Length: 433
Image (cartoon, rainbow, N blue to C red; front, top):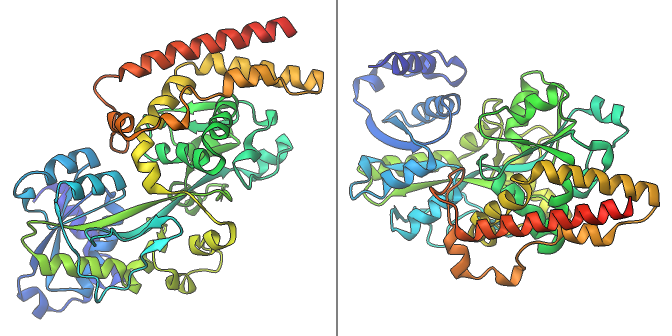
């Protein structure tokens, strides 16, 4: 047993709050059956669920295999699937890709309390091959004191971010490098439409500074007051708040959710144990564990929210109140293209884009009118929504956080077209100056 495994087992045995030490000697005498779970969740999350599951089902013992989504895809595509019983992770594209490869077997939901959908978001695959177990929501991390100093109200929706008062004080994660940011990029594109959505992103990018892979955490940027607002996903922020960070998190009125799923592998050695773990995740206890500060996710069963604190965000109520319309099925098919387009039009030319938007805001303030011609050059998407045919979208398919080994030929064309537009926009601005 490795030092890591030994310390991890001691952590589980010391989890008195979950009653691990109360397991009787009779139970330990009966050798528990192994249930092998592949996941990308961090150790604190898995330790919490492992202890609770083994208390509820002492006849089983979890064997946890950690893999990133792209590695899990390769591993679970093998004929024997590495002896894995279940896959549990927040990577919708991986689950769907593996479903298409017939890597899953149907889950028996007859005795599991499931909710099949939340608005446009399916929570159960049509063939019951995978189920959502929890949700994470996108939104804005902010420091109320910093916003007050800048004279900016806490944001309620995406458009509230478009104020020159926030210039260079918005932390924007790069979709090609930060796993959760691809869906975040697509939410305004669906909420406001393709053209208006890209106009929003161009102006917001001009007000922002970029957060790339491994550079820093969004919450650290806001706590350090380098950013007044950071675009993020809720559990990163609520975790920081639980640790004492002076932050708040706002879910936009046009919101979106990222589900985590669980699936039983086609060749699961322990199908009964796998089914038991799925049932546990969807049980009252499994769903209530999501409130724990180490997890802080949103349950997928609406009735569970009555057992949570009154201020715990309820996406079912939010969807009913504001009509959240984000369609993840539409989003999944185009996230790769959206990510590539974002990279070539907003990330690569970001320095120039920021300068031009600063000039736009300055001249619009001086002249008291919008510079429509310049805005058209900066905001118009390089390809129309009508061009998003399946044949094109399939060329940009990728998993969360992964990058293709080589750029698509279209990306070079987009980069050249964007440079031409930026040059034309600068010429317009210099002429007006």
